Length: 370
Ligand SMILES: Nc1ncnc2c1ncn2[C@@H]1O[C@H](COP(=O)(O)OP(=O)(O)OP(=O)(O)O)[C@@H](O)[C@H]1O
Image 1 (cartoon, rainbow, N blue to C red):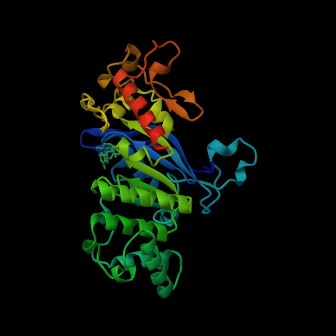
Image 2 (tube, helix red, strand yellow):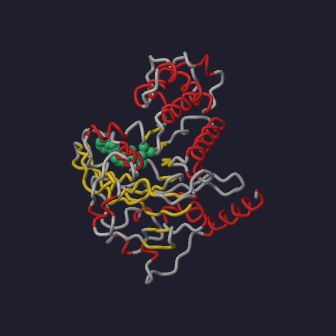
């Protein structure tokens, strides 16, 4: 995997004005995205995954407040900016970095739907219901890449073939409602490819599909990622989906990233009790154990807790968890977790025995498959 950074989310904070006051949806998150990698962001409903991805693509709701932080896009070719965090190192003035939270509408239009594309759970939300799908793909090519109408049509048919639409010459003239959910999601992917996107944000793209179709769409996303060196942000509440298709995972809880690391680190050496809970709640075909449900509910983000937001649901919580927010502790060069359990003075606490046994079983299974 190349290590060319394409995106850097820095101390990003997004709130919303609501009738009950200000809701703090994203509370200072940090992550990087590299070229050609898939970063999964997982967490329960309401943890701030969608708000994060909507901030990146610039489609936050009107009542949102940019409470702080930046989203740096590297080498967009759009402009040369000098940003605070790169000022002091030598030669950085030359770097092409833009802050997506600061650029104007016109520049954002050049990026959204072109360099950055998004696939949603419901493909209909990205498609025009009364326009033939072929036209929707070729329009992207025609408007944004300056091809002639004939060239655009030819290319659109090629793209339909590339994403696995059978008989693309014929289906070019069909309307979205004439396709199944899985096929519609393929059309949305074809539009993203038509735009030559560099970053593809997938927000629960397979949640509404049945399992077989889900696997096919995941396979397609994986294939185009490899073929085009795409960078993917994959948002899901389902850890099972990302196990086989992400390079790194960020676990979100109550508007913060509480743990991130490579897929192996998060699956095999999880450190945050919330990650333990998420992993324990994953259905496991080989286990006869009763499925673990995470007790309690996430906090009301109008009044985020003072300490570790997971403390109230965490049976391993210590006094300090209710009083002070834990910093990100480094586990390895690629693995970090925000839990006081990693403080050198904390009592030695390992993951639950049941989870440890599951992990060992899964490791053994993976070895068998190799
Ligand atoms: N326009 C809005 N106005 C008020 N609150 C909002 C708005 N959009 C999102 N929120 C709130 O922000 C928080 C984070 O929402 P977000 O959609 O990012 O969660 P999520 O992790 O993506 O969950 P889901 O999987 O359900 O989409 C939630 O509490 C949500 O209710």
